[in-house]
Structure formats: C-alpha cells, structure tokens
Length: 340
Image (cartoon, rainbow, N blue to C red; front, side, top):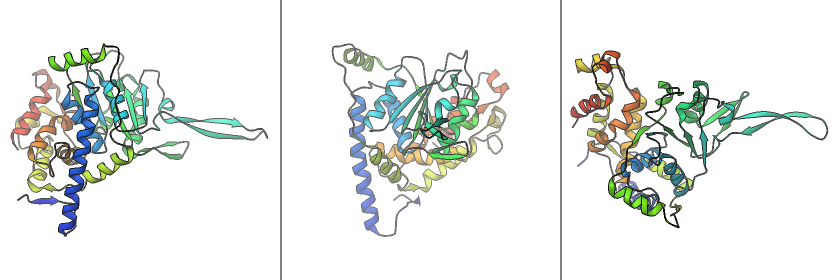
C-alpha cells in the first residue's frame, strides 16, 4: 500500500479507476511515440527518454553533446513525431533579440497613414530549437527568459502570447568554448533537465550506418498531436506521489544547498545549490518517467535516476573544490547515497 501525499483525485473509486485507465492509455500512446522515434534515432534511449520526460512535464531541455551526435536530428524528429510546429534558430554572436522574438515595422497604407505592425519571430512556434545557444550574447540569451518562463513576449509594451504547447530544446557544445558566452544561472534554471549526449554503442552505430547511407532513409511518422501532448501534460500532474518519494525529493534538493546541508564537506565544496524550481522539476519528471515506463505512480528509483539531469545545471562548485579535482557528478552521487 502506497501512502499518498498528493493524489489529485477525488474521494470516489470511480475517479481512481478513470485515472488508471487514462494513464494506461497514455502509456500505450507513448510506446508508439518511442517506436516512431526509434525508426530515425538509433540507440541513445536514455537521451530520448529524458527529452520525452521534459516535454511531458511541460518544460525545456538543454542538450549537451559533441558535434555529430544527432542533437539536431533528435529535435527535428520529435517535432515530426509529436505533430508540433517546430522552428530552428542558429545562435551566433551577432544574433539580436529581435531576430528571435520579432520586431515592429512601420508601414504606410495607400491613404498615407502610417502604423506599426508586429512581425513575429521564430519563437512563435510550439517547439523551438536553439542551436548552440551559448554562442549568442547574454542580451540575446536573456530574450528567451520571459518566453521560457511565461510563454509570452512583450514588444513595445504589448504582450504577445506564444502558441501552446511551447517548448525550447537548446543545444550546447561542451568542448568548444572559443567565442561562446556561458549561460547565466537564471536561464539555466529555466531548463527542466540538462541532457548529456554521449557516443552510441556499437550495435546502434552499426544500425545507423546501414539505415542512413542507403538509397532511402526512414522518415519520422507522426504518432501524437499537440492537443494530445497538452492533455498528457495535464494528466501527468494528476498522478499520485507517495510520501516516500516526496521526502526523497525534498531531502535530495535541500541537502544540495550549502547553507543547510548536513554534510560538512559538501558545505565547503558547493558555491550554491538548487532552488525550489529543482524540486518542482523532480516532482513532475518522476511522474512522467513512471508513465513512460508503464507505471501508475513514481518511485524513489525515479528520483535517483533523474537526480543528475535535474540538479547538474543548478549547482556549482567552489574554486577550491574545482582545484582539488572534485566533480559535480561525484557530489550528486553522494547526495543520492543518502536516499538510496
């Protein structure tokens, strides 16, 4: 028997039965989504799952990986499979905020009257790929802040709502730092997960070579729609969370803060830790991961599995810790040991 902290259900057993049926139906649809993605993306199952978890949670993801590992292909495939209006912006040092959110232009009609008209930028879409986001200036990076958090932009005092759903999948090259601008902490915190992309295994790379160098290349097929994705996001928020899982989330996040961490060594190693938004991200992501795995409620295992992608970009080591060779992954592993 699971002790429930937040069920989102009424008191009737009919409500519970309805929720179970809806979650099972969503699990079936997500299996179709996975299969459709697997026709184009080979291997990288953890990356695909983390990205789907981000979208099901209604958030944004930062995809970090070396060139040529399929980051752009993954975003394009997700847009096609989920039936989303997707656009891509290549971030460069000369990119301006207006190039993303749009701008007003002065027009004159046949009667000679002049008026401003707002021209929408590429941010007015459902899935925005911000390619190499750290190559743009801080001013341009910050243009995405309001859009990512509030799903709207303000130009010349007029607020323009963005399409729903709205998600940003940003990519970043971890090794080439020349001509880049590190993302500020405020913007990093807007990303639900930081997804690290590594090399595929040998079997996946072999399958990819055979599938992508022949006369025909498989195209992604739509398996879900925008309205269905929004309904899935609403359903995720109704899934029950047990007290054990809730306690694990709070323990993990609060222990990662140097001000209140019970581990003296971590207090010396951490410059700052995750805020409440990290706990919210874990709460939603664990629910989404459970549904993606065909389960009706999240477990502590989900918290442990998602701890690193949720916390990694929301923490920083002190200079002395970096000088001693301490890695954030090692710190997060110690935090996980406390709740395992």
